[in-house]
View 1 (cartoon, one colour):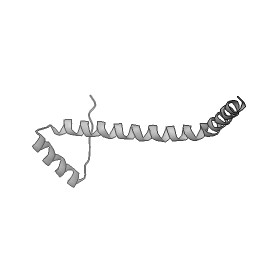
View 2 (cartoon, helix red, strand yellow):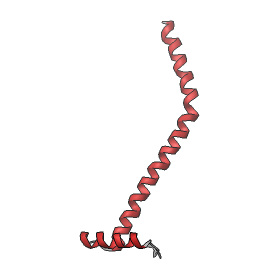
View 3 (cartoon, one colour):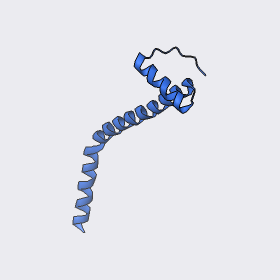
View 4 (tube, helix red, strand yellow):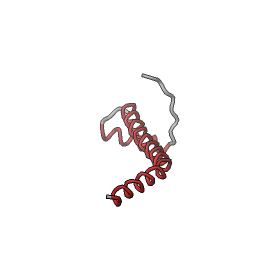
Length: 76
């Protein structure tokens, strides 16, 4: 495990203290879970962006394949 020094805005710290007290959860565990959740969200956003770029790169090839299939089907 890594040690980290973290500066939080006062209102974020206050909210965190209130929530962890109600949940009876250690602040460290709460922050670890929050960062993990945020990482998952960011990974999905990055994947979505990468897939959109890949889709644009292959769109013209896909359309060409569809045109060729249409010609084959219409030729029968």
